Length: 109
Length: 115
Image (cartoon, rainbow over all chains, first blue to last red):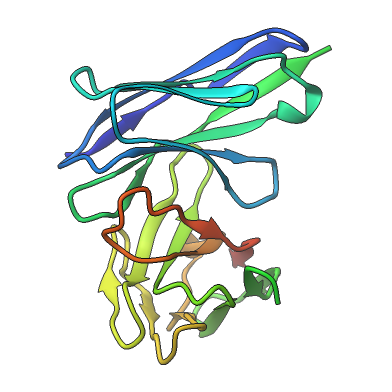
């Protein structure tokens, strides 16, 4: 079966760094996506990885290891507005997205 | 219109009633998708369409139907609603299926409650 695992909830302090992990087992792999979803809103695209390594985009970075079936999203200089759920999704062999349940990130001042 | 719109924003529906959720995009994207999102679960694909005139079943298609008469519109119909269909429904679109890095853009969602 297909499976995406990520922690249910994490707490971090404003100004700090947090790493959100995602492990996956899917039928085929055509890339891994991270989305941000604020409460009551739609998911919005953050990053995409298809090759091993780190992709940096401002305060956010995403890492992928295909051999380990593992990714993480790194958020630096946390701001209160970063309080949201972070969704990991893998594009499978049929080019459909398989979604994790999301990690709720709580930022404390 | 900018991006994807969905209607209604929310709806309370009696069990057994028929309901159509509307979705329209103005980005000329070929592919469109319907997901449901339930607490503690990831987004689950209900139906998708890779291009106008074609549709396909996702992970949880039972009790739902879709049509894709043109590029812009992708309505989702619940023929006879049941309480287990209480959920938040998101419509999404992407440029072209099979395109590596094919980012999906989401509508604002419809919150549906079936009593």
